[in-house]
Length: 400
View 1 (cartoon, one colour):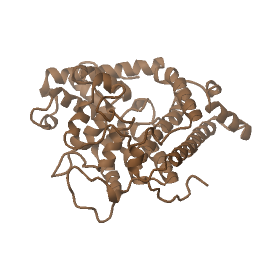
View 2: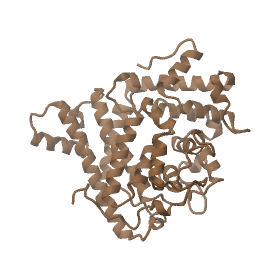
View 3: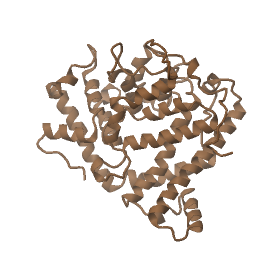
View 4: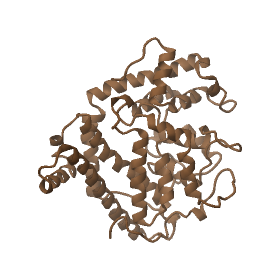
């Protein structure tokens, strides 16, 4: 069966008609279901537009063809919808989660996140997943009756649990949260609406998270090759990637390099999607869930790579880490970017009047001033952060 063929809605798919609702009650839309409405609200959000000018790996002036946070998000969304369609899941919920998953990223990619994390070390640090929750529940101010986008419970749950449960059933914290505590944004929102941090998220949320991994693997290879951080020959020994390259060479021995790179990315994405469909289908058949709560309360995630593909995924990331993410050129630029973010934070902390007046007037009485500074910086695009730095400091790095 082709993966794009129509599949009947599965009994464990999230049902927009049975959504647990929104924090603030609203009239039902006569033309859109709850999850489609979430997608539309995310697309029209200011934070979504800003993704067009936020770094994925390469800063904006290095070339028009490198991924930005927005193009990455759209690629994740396409993959998530393909997976949801093939598995009989709700495509709109998968799309909403993919569209929103990076809204909390600050400028300059993970460099900006590292910088803000250091700046907020005595406030619990900075976590871009938690910041995404803060964006969609508080920082977007578009509606007269509430702050945030007032998204459905299922969308918020999936965003918070992008990497799986945060706690055990008894409330004890899992993984890195055991060392650092729950992010402030998650803890504060939990006082208003319980998101069941101890359970897995819906199958739609799980496959949206895997779509993120698939997009990273395929498209970071493409961008790394374009930037000449490594060559096609360097990929020959990487599991899965090398196999696909040999397959393409066998079928198209005289293919030009541009088409070869595109074909490599296309086939990698296809192989990974097909693997996730097969493995997730196998796990779902074994679990035999009657509804979405059976997926949430399972002992393990249902959305996953097969063991062999999971190993290939790790190998790809192990290849990319030293040759791309930690490449000397990238590290030099990202080091300068971290300095820009830290400089801005320190300046706003020592001189609150340096923050633009329209932003300084936002926020709730008694709200942590340092957290609000982080909110302001995290919302910046790369270009705006550099413009602000140039306004406040005598010299600003060129990030080249």
